[in-house]
Length: 81
Image 1 (tube, helix red, strand yellow):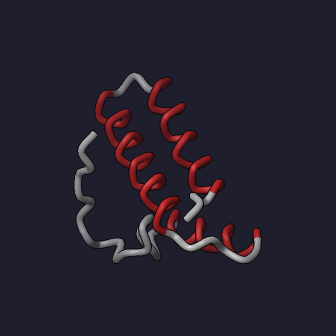
Image 2 (cartoon, one colour):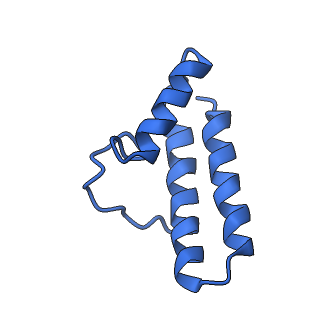
């Protein structure tokens, strides 16, 4: 399966922002979010349209859906590097 390029872009944005962030806590959160986006990029079936991808990204941002399509209340598990 080919990764979703939009989700990869979101992950790269998080990594870029983490590199600019002075707060260690926020930098760490951004890197966790980047890992979640990359995981979603590899797991999520490709959306049929740009509109569908935008809708899905908004749902994730609003907490209606976890980055990996899971329950947003579920704990984020660490991904070993």
